Amino acid sequence: MSEMRIPQQSLYVYPVMEGASPTAHTFEQACRDLASRLRFDHAGSPAEATVALAPLLTRKLAPGEWSAPLMGTLIFHPSALPLHRGPDAIRRTLAARERVSAASWFWCDAGLDTGPLCEQELVVLDLEERARDAYARRFIPAALRALTRALIGIAQGTPRRVEQEHRLATYEPALPKRAA
Image (cartoon, rainbow, N blue to C red; front, side):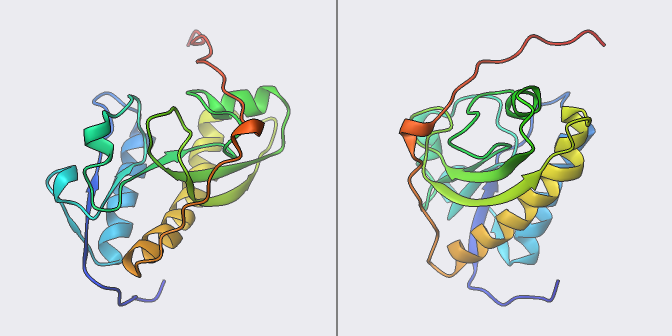
């Protein structure tokens, strides 16, 4: 990727939980590295940031937290939102035998996975692949490409905000954990 010149911005990245998988930590670091390459400075808190990123959010953010950055907070979700809202989107998509999904970055709001879309990238699934492998091999690369477009739009002052079509939304609760 050639070096891009964009106006200086600041970014806060919500850290993944302690004990999260190495893949999750790698994804978080890749988001930080991408932002740095695009000339975003690190912000020490959401309130100091132009935008905040939540590449692997496992909790609901308080309104004061997600609205603190100047432009808001972007959350990554591994589904073609508004479809498969909820915590086990990839497993649900594979269980439904759906071959097409998406890596979605959306603007946080008061709902669960309901905010306006910023960027999405198509992900074609291998139905024989495990969800964790699809996440690492398919969703993370697509998410980073989509995040590149999102951050460029933010830096240029033209971030996308496309309302989700809520009447078509699906929400599925967490699936039971499988025995190792």
